[in-house]
Length: 124
Image (cartoon, rainbow, N blue to C red):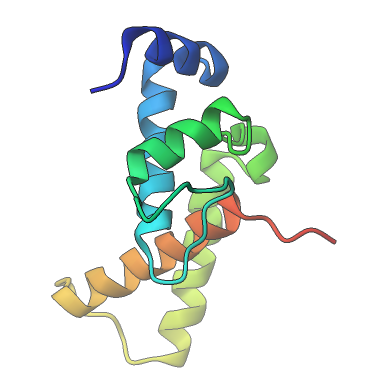
């Protein structure tokens, strides 16, 4: 549990409890991956992911990107997914009506890559 004062500061910085929860969850998932590095200096050997994420938010090292900055709306995202589906189906065998575990794994991996790109945009 977070200290009430710290939680209130975080909510004000992020813009709401839901956004705070989303940001903490996404960043903790990212930090849990092998080789992931925090954006702040960690004292000692402790690697408490929640504490690290809270400090990163307080120091304004991370934030949620507004939907407009992502580059497309929900409708555009659906169209993009349909185009990818059409391109993929032309290259591979026709899709079966059932979804198998391997398909779900591929979908999850793709979404994780997209999330990582959103959280860590490459600077030009």
